[in-house]
Image (cartoon, rainbow, N blue to C red; front, side, top):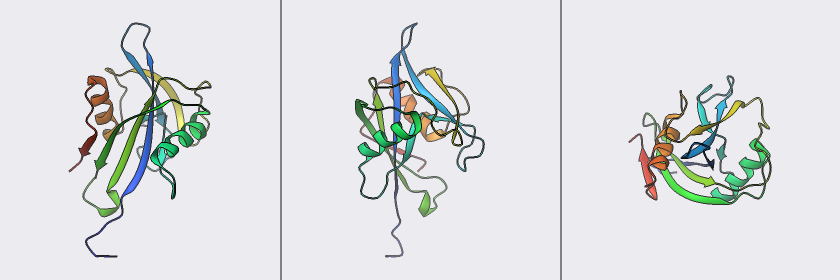
Length: 155
């Protein structure tokens, strides 16, 4: 490997959306479990994870929704790609693919209680705290409704 090259870690995120009873839009979030190595006890996408070798980001989002929430037949919509870093370490170069869905089969439920401690629906304009920072940035764009195809975060 060339000394100045790095490995980019891809991940897929799925935000389930629904119309709020009082108007506006709600998003389903999970509270990350207290024992997870990254951002424990922070609110995050209800379904997300790394893209596996030979898998598309689209397929990863569907797989994660089934593994983490027990859902199938998800009507995915691509939202944006985020290139992000944290602290400048090469391993922290990430490419995140964000999707939303308003239709699926099944009732979302925690399938991996060792990784998630709680699920909740929240108004897009009134998110819980603490949030995973790069996800809060993506959700803020989604709330405004003008999400660019590419977003940089942490540079």
